[in-house]
Length: 484
Length: 95
Image 1: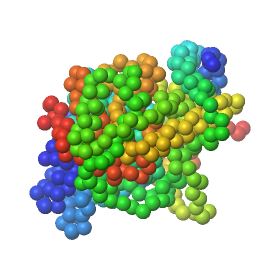
Image 2: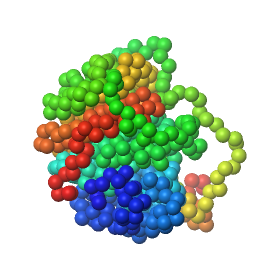
Image 3: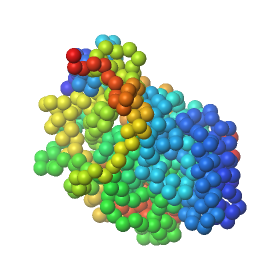
Image 4: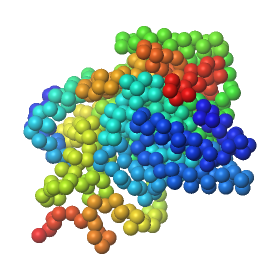
């Protein structure tokens, strides 16, 4: 059962071949068996089974959706009433939210059953999941490799088939990079499509929720239950609901695939390039046409990101003061001392570093030179995408320069770690939808991802193009050894 | 641009994060590495370009100014590190 897709699980549930309770039990047993991955931070079988019972009752009543009874796990950036919500930080250890995040609520309303909460980089800051207060997540393909980050627990859980789907979030590549490193399908929609209500904020002008699954078809099904306008999020986009599965069966004949030359320059490892070029060749076999495009300032995405994201993070994380919730130091003098000590102890090294950068670039005398300048270069990068989409329908290229690296390889050098997101940050800055789908294996037999990006609000087209590749290949069906 | 250890202490105070002298020295090198990365932006000509604060532009959506939420005080306070009689406790600030 665990090798089945979300679509197949939904059909098996509605045909009564399996009950939601049986499915929940099966996945809970797999989660328990593979605890060494450290993908899950909170598992409460009684909560999961109660949700599964309710799903079975709903199926029996005949008012189920295609997702009712299908299990899902949530990145620990989404707050939940029934599971602890920590953002993988000591700051929020044991925190029980009085409400569910909008995304959790919507998927719950569709009848999905929550398996638990997934490990990630602290406050979603990182590219390897090595920044979690609760320890590293292992890559199921190779336990000496990182799963990617920040949504490392989500990626590892889906790759190991200990969850058929997992929510994730992307600020600069935190869905696509771990999806690539862990050999699964991950998509971030257009900024504003998924409600940020109840998503613990990191950089508000970039943060966007998405989904990780084993296939594009599954992602489309879940998007139908997950996305949509929410008045509680002031940046939520007011648009009519749509069916994200509508373009799955459209072929790619005549499709113009834009290949940015800057994504194939210095730094791209030959193993990744080979797998990506073979994927492009598959599209050509199916009738698509490759068009060389240019995103001349894409590489400036990294410096832009490392001004904007820390600035917004220093503002968002100022709410953690040890007064209303979160960690409070055991010993302190006056109020200011209490706040300073609580924040020093509660935040790990990476959030502390980003808060300091943010406080600096926003401080008196530096705002125009850094924050405003970064926002202007952000627009230059976003405009270049619009020019590119004048020449092509979908942009395709690598997700990362290399396959997953080993633990500790980049942990001591923040700048080397930041460069992991070279190809994903530009799309995040523009706010366009982007995804990673598995397209082979590189060095040390570690997975390679193909990045596909579409223009604003073209998720259905994007998912269709990904699905057409997955109809012709089986990379997305491969399951790592030891998890079959 | 290059930060000094006293800059780090000053920013840490602005951000209300306690840092010791040795932590400030250690952080300094990493922060300067990041600032060298950020410096690249200074060379870009952005004359006449509008800053982009939101991917889709537009203005902030506003709602009618009326109470739309009924907060549950007990539920909202159950994560408080210290509370009494429905109030958050902090060190005395007014003598």
